[in-house]
Image 1 (tube, rainbow, N blue to C red):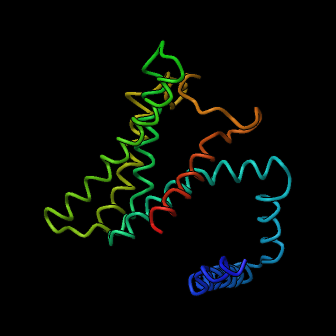
Image 2: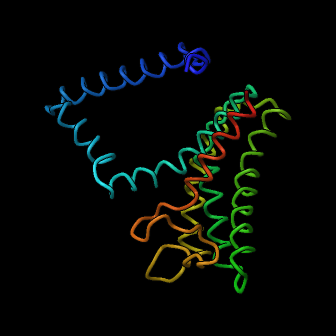
Image 3: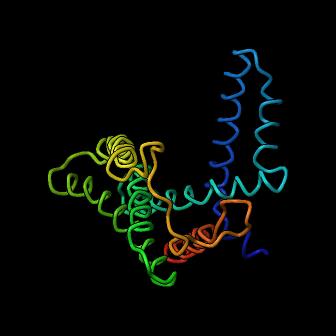
Length: 211
């Protein structure tokens, strides 16, 4: 226990807690100015995220992609690069995963699922390569290009879902991903799947590498 307390970076922990408190205070000021009770709003937010099985599963579902994108930002920071385009890279990976999920048919799950994941990883990495080349080849600031890349990826993903990859004239979406390309769900009534455990594993893996 003493070793754990000794290894804790108290300055970083204090910075995180201070940032959280400041954010809550600023939010409370704006809510009060608009005639809302900040305590009531924060209570509703807490209940909506952490009270009840359904709400907790929803929080875990939404936390999974955030863990992956935060790791992508962290790796960039550790190399001295500001990657502000993880949202766009996530979208490009999602579109690529959807395409691989409904295009490759007749494959067993042990081939189709890894193929879909790898396709998403390659698409996201290639999209991240664009601002990297612009920075190291032409000296273009990566903060600007990655932020711009988010908007481009959002519009491009919307275009693909509405036109070339559209399922039908009645629905602006891609065809359904085959069951062989889906990560197993933890429970049948929630979208939370094994991606959560992969995200947690990657977090510990990068922590070990950085240490």
